[in-house]
Length: 357
Image (cartoon, rainbow, N blue to C red; front, side, top):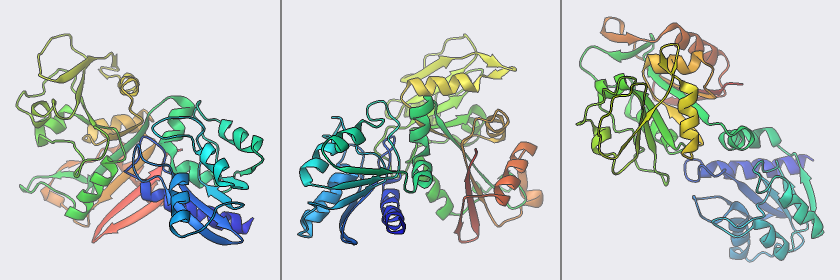
């Protein structure tokens, strides 16, 4: 059992290499082992590309190793259907694998245990549940979408050491370039970014991943009164990267290439649950909320966040601080600081991340 766990941990480490490159598909790692020796390993490297199992077989071949009679460790149940690639179960059977150790079952209707059944029918021993929890956490958006048909929501913000969200001294940024570069890695994990109209009016952002990921991001704006300027960067580039504006007013505005969606109110504001449902209809699995304090606080108060990412600079702004975080954000930050799942330093900037149960 200890050996199984160690090999699965290797497969999980491989799977992480696919983060930001394969979404909304799951990241998957695979290791092929015989007599305690790794013969080949692989991971899902890019959206639409070969799956982890196929890449592991290719690695075996490259090294001159035969996988016949070997054991496969894979972080997710092998697929059994034709999608962008052929079914992995067919390749596993053809390769002569004698045992498959999978961390967890694929929750999607197309698979959901069918892959295991096909392997067992072919005489291959199947073991599941090794490192199940970390495997499911690694693909939490994928599992939530398959099980509940709801979006995974990441709420992110940056703040000074004394809790300010913006500054009044003419400088734009709170954090250093390395932290801002890291934000673009998160953007490549998601299929949509959401902000409020105040962020658009104040910063005129592009809301794109740089460099761009494989998936065309939807840039969503909460704009109750439909005030977005026609000369904003979002509107001007809507024909290149989709823009979806959520509003509560009936008035009509023609904004070239921009999708305008009227939604109901909730306590006088845009109904966030309706917004999430609308984004879900557009194929979004993971949403990044980058709005200002009102938007962020609304997602936190309504318990719509699944994951938190908070960047904190080492600078205290004091009188140079312009907009301070609200109580809900402060309380959330303090809870995260006491119980984060990941902490990373960028020089003196600190990034804390954590999942909300």
